Image (cartoon, rainbow, N blue to C red; front, side):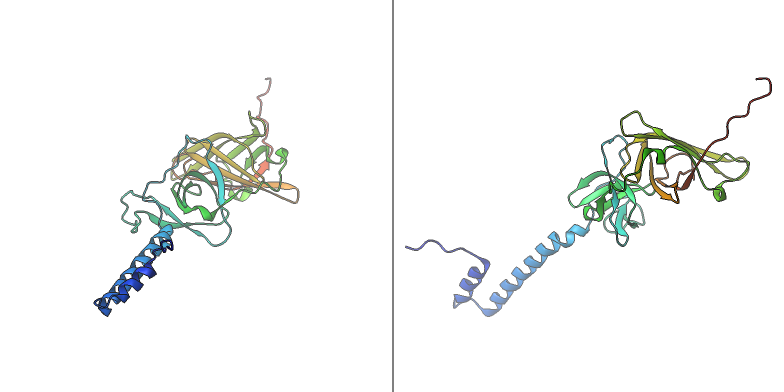
Length: 264
């Protein structure tokens, strides 16, 4: 006796069609139902991947082992933030939809399936698809001496008579690491001055240096033009008072020695 035949949907439909009392409209209805179920399954498994997790995404300053990556090259990627915070501008996902540009360095707080909760670029944290992320390149190698020293914004961005933003990069306590400390200011109307500072340590990856100090995140990238290094900074707007930031271009300088009074 031959073994049992594999039972498939086609086998079932063939059996139904063979029944003389089974009307044609019932066969059509059955086939239509099977088609609808198939389409629903495809929509859920394929198109459902484009819907971010229904969960909050927040920066975790305690996660010192968080991965540092960047947004992959190409057009800006979809970014869903302020999830489940009852914002009026949220869409059906419960999040506000934005974008993140290629090359932006971010911290991965956690992952959920095909999605990653990231922080970086501004004060928000949000979801992007993991396929939109790539590892930081370890090349080109940059000599430690190129990073180290005092840094300030270019002359065109500095204001005479005011305290200006500064960074000091020096050798870190851990082998292969660099320490970044700095101060930044924002001047409002009258005597309003907002202040911010950071002090953190990290190991550079190629031309990138990622610093975390509490809720403050500062990402620095270095380029060397005509033998003179320059830094480009991007922080998450959580490094001090209102409007204080460490973003923008930085150039190296040698601070003047403190003036001493006569007879000292």
